[in-house]
Amino acid sequence: MRGGSLTKAVALSGTVAVFAAGCLSSGSSTSTGAGGGAATAAGPGKSSVEVMYGLGPDTEPGFKADVEGWAKQNGITVKFTKAASWDTEIRARVAGGNAPDLGLFPQPGLMCDLAKQKKLVPFDDATVKLNEQTLVPGFVGAGTCADSKVYGLPNEVSVKSVLWTDAPAFSAAGYTEPKTLDELMALTDKIRSQGKTPWCIAAESGAATGWPITDWIEDLVLRFAGPDNYDKWVKGELKFNSPEIKPAFEYFQKIAFTQGNVRGGTKSIVATNFQTGGNALFTQPPGCYLFKQATFVANKGGFPDAVIAKLDTQTRPYPFPAKTAGDHPVLTAGDLVAAFNNDANVLKLRNFIASKENGTEQAKAGAFSPHKTADVSLLPNKTLQTIAKEVLYKASAARFDGSDLMPAKVGAGTFWTEPVKWISGQEDLNTALNNIDASFPKTSG
Image (tube, rainbow, N blue to C red; front, top):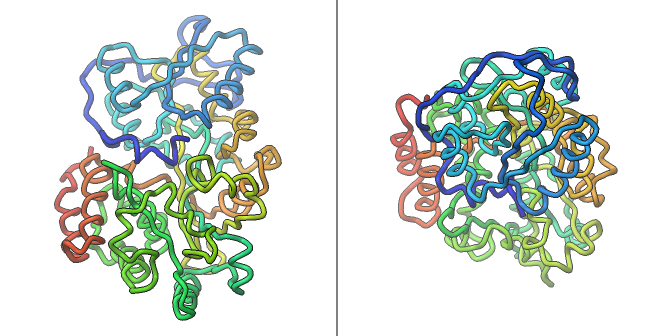
């Protein structure tokens, strides 16, 4: 299990780091197209190109198959290097002057740190514009750094804005899809008033306990504050305790802190495993009726094997509701491809990985293309096809995981730990928010 969706659980070293000095070329390049057309750069082009990534076992085979197919057609050999700890290993490679040719970055903030140090080569404007025609809105912005240049574009994405239900139980109880946050709260109240438990909420992840709550908050900030304020928030331009951001926490508090709303009670949230915490949806009678989690939960190790075996009839995923009917904001994670040099073949492969032509084999394994033109029928089941059509490709604005964009001491630090204290009853909401704000570096660059 992987990766874009599990980054927070495994990348304990955080999202933003300062690397040792040492320069690689960052000169701009030109290309005739995102599909890997001829590029202009110094030299005839390498015969062997190294790609480094931290993909998991569900994503890696499809990625390698897609790239190998392209490489064979273009007469290039690709060296695939898998990092067990992406942050640590890419940091060491760059500091040692031995960077790979291409890297798949699960954290845009980390990528932009390297871009600031002139370690990466930006995409040219023509390639960006070509991709922008088919990419879900917001994905170009995810790969844009402080100098307004695009250094990374997504290879694949996971979808976090998903509300899971047990389809038969949900329908039998007479419940219907909530399309706004007000409707979601009304549904929560209705289920509780019937003597049932509305929610399973799970945030336990070992040393990374607390990160699933950041997904909740990020989705809610995207809805209450809007995409532009979301961007300001992750940059530290809007405080956690500001009137724009605080309503997201207050909405979550109303759901999670109201007696009877959460299976096991509020304090159980931080003791319930994030992968299996929704499995009570499927007990008889249901232990809960709603579970918010990214798409990885429908893989082995998440929902019970018996549920996964009949996923299309047992589950019914809905988009996590918007604040206003008709709006469709989506929270995602994924891997952005970036180049460490401007070799012609390196740039050609980078451009292919970012293009709509990439992703056929990955889709068959259940990975979502960031391009709205993707053939959703390639996805292995109707459940994932539904998420692609009803959630990802209907997005009015998509944003990458906010804590992966924030400085490490916040995004993989206080933004995890302070909500755990809040949920556990050790401190109130204002204290938690003020503590996070106090930890945010005065300058995040």
